[in-house]
Image 1: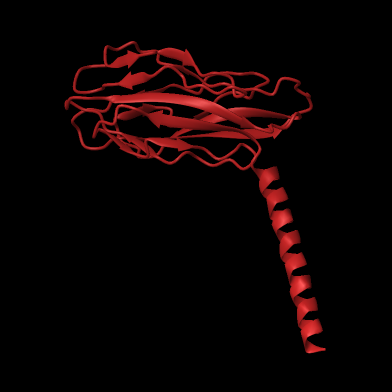
Image 2: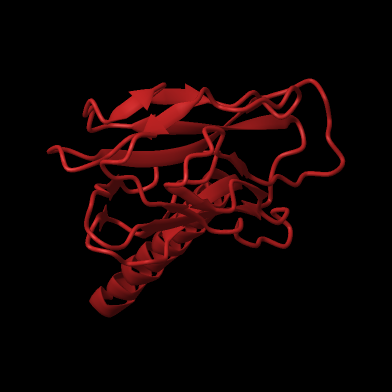
Length: 202
């Protein structure tokens, strides 16, 4: 009868919805794998603008962290930066790298505005980027992400960490100038680095 047919259609529709949800869950689980980078600014000065706490997409579907803007100058306060790497079911036949991007393009943002580290099979630093923000208009917008690619090498220890290094040594560059995060299987932040750039040279 009509009720029986109606019940049949509902049952079939529920089955299709259930299978679709399972498929979406599988696809989502497949896409959200690998490693991601998280950034945090902890001082909270008005010179530290945009998103102060964000993570990139997972390396299986890479996307940038949300933009953070550094506009340090002669006002009191600075920006405290720290980073960490998180892992979720990384794939054995892959290798990884970290990429950095500065997108405002002010003359105060100097050096390489878009560069990546070496892949994990041959790790190397990103190219140097120099923040020289001061009382001039403009600032520097920072973003990071992690990428992956297939590799013939099967790695048994699938963990990553991020390392940071400041090389100019100006008194405006404070805190930890060389630090690494914890490994991704037990993620911890790098030691904080503080940017207090202003009209002083350096």
